[in-house]
Image (cartoon, rainbow, N blue to C red; front, side):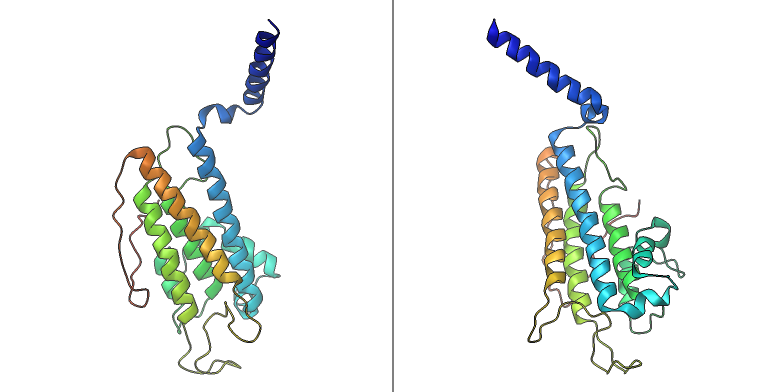
Length: 228
């Protein structure tokens, strides 16, 4: 009888917890995992935006923002994920790393990443039992982050710009000098790891096969992710 009483108390406590947060009743374990990874991906993007703006303060000043913090908030406003020329996602990433791009390069690069990842998640930030993640899109997104990171590290000026000499990065990120700064590389690694793990989980859940692509980063093109 005592064991039965303890079991009833446990079940009542568990049910009370669910009723206090009804959304949890329509979430499975995989949905909760997806929520956590989505939140961490958003956090990594914000850290990337802050790090890039701190290393490239001239960029946030191009947008006329009163502060770095205001510039970061603007980057993550979905209406800002399309630039004046109508470019979005990976097209916006590429534009921001062109030498003739006159707008805020950090907003283009991180905003392009944010839009591309948002599309890979089906336009959702929270997941429930009837939601289904596309493992192929998550895989494509992981490869696109790898390509974007490589392009960021290798985009250089062919001509001097103000006080910056020819050959200097279009956007300063990792630093390989006497004092190394690899914090950007770590953030990109977190993004790629989360996307690859979710792709595997989603493929297992839906019994779908992911088509993997082998590319050289130096010549790689972004993989397709339809806009949502």
